Image 1 (cartoon, rainbow, N blue to C red):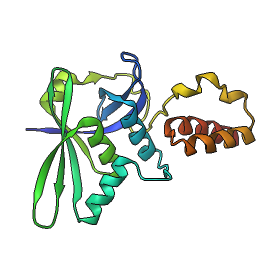
Image 2: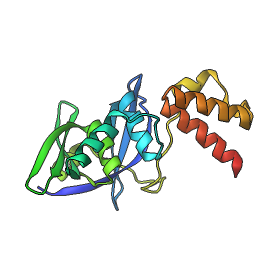
Image 3: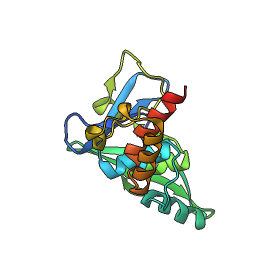
Image 4: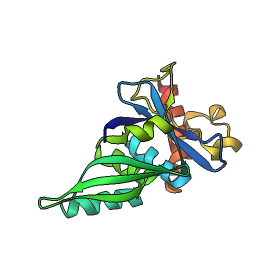
Length: 194
């Protein structure tokens, strides 16, 4: 079966489901996109790895990566292998010196692992033909990742805060391990430094 390589091009709040997020995968060297609705924890796990943030304690996906590395298991690729009743199914293609195995995974977890290992993400062409959507505008480069607009910031107008206040708020949300809010605050701090 022919595989098409994808990459994460956006991560944002889901418009269709409250308290959910959408990860958008884009066809490498192509225009089609694949939006997938995922949960908040999974979105946070993907965002933390994409933004190369270092949590104070390892997140579940970091623990899994550390466990795999400790036992010389390598993640070679992620394959979105099936679509049933609107749910995507994925596999992790892993190997040791002695064996290669495919491990069943939720797609959101597979993506969080792929980002951590820097391995390619694929989808079978038959699934992409059904679930992919055309993006004729090609508005963002394939490697640009849009930061998540944090839900929790709605009561705080971070634009009205001074730099010292933003740094304090950033420290507080990192202590709470709210990495999605931290990304938004960090981006605001960085935009003011330019």
